[in-house]
Image 1 (cartoon, one colour):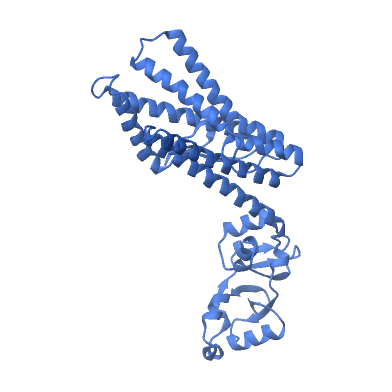
Image 2 (cartoon, rainbow, N blue to C red; image 1 turned 45 degrees about the vertical axis):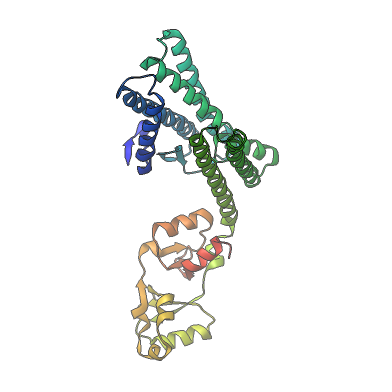
Amino acid sequence: MRIARPFGIPVYVSPYWFVIAGLFVVFYANSLAGALPGNLRYLVAAAFVILLYASVLVHELSHSVVARAFQLPVRRILLYPLGGFSEIEREPPTPAREFLVSAAGPVISLALAAAGYGLARALRLPHASVGDILLTQFWLANLLVGIFNLLPGLPLDGGRMLRAGVWKVTGKSASATVVAAWAGRALAVAVLLVPLGIYAGTGGQYDMFNTVWLAVIAAFMWVGAGQSLRATRLRERLPGLQARRLARRAIPIPASLPLAEAIRRADEAHARALVVVDHDDRPIAIVNETAVTATPPQRRPWIDAGSLARSIDPGIVLPADLSGMALLDAVRRTPATEYLLVEPSGQVYGVLAAADLDHAFAGV
């Protein structure tokens, strides 16, 4: 659900956030049992969780503000149980901008840690008082968030900074992503194995809760690195997504033509699509391939091809020159099984089947 809109950027909270935040409050309150009396420790724990996620929000806002300064559109910020994520709709066009957008978050977190530490030293609050506990946990949490995010592996900020460096050296953003993603996977394995080794080496004396929590973080890192690898593979296929290359040859038919005859004409013309035209030969509908396939051969002579067609709405008429992300965006705006491709002059070029686009995008 949306909770705020700082700088015009919508901030959303995952439903699971409330569950994990509640668990954080309980676990942290239990750790304060010897320091604070009664229910006060639960209030302090809740205040700390709010401060922690407010710090995460500031961390993500820094990414978004720097991205906007470089004219990169920011869709939203999502706060989820393990942190936050800024949905920046376009990749930075240069390694330097990638580095600056990525570095903004850890820099702000470390700045918050320094400010919290300085304030704690200046106030000299009584040890184990509410203010002392909150300030100490605040600057420690931001210090850990800043340092952890500087680790050189995707999906962490340090991984994006590493990607920017490799991109600068090699000139290849895709190769840089692969390097940073595998570095992220190596870090995920280390995050998992180190505490498990300590737990085993100490005969179970190491806190099992910390081990489980680090295992969750390791899984998050592994999955995030894998998503980066998949996204890179998909981006590499984008140049091959050209409407003209994927188009099926189409023949015009009247709506009243029996389906069997329409199929015969298509086979004779080596066409794989049927476009219904009106009396002025203007395209008005596209025959649905799935409906044709589902019609038994013995019924095809008795069914009009037009009865299996979808009317041509403006959204399914696409320029034949579309390619790459522009083609994907056009298809996403108007989901359909077939699209009519037209030349700049308005002449029909062919029909694009969504199934063909899916296969090309998947690398089939």
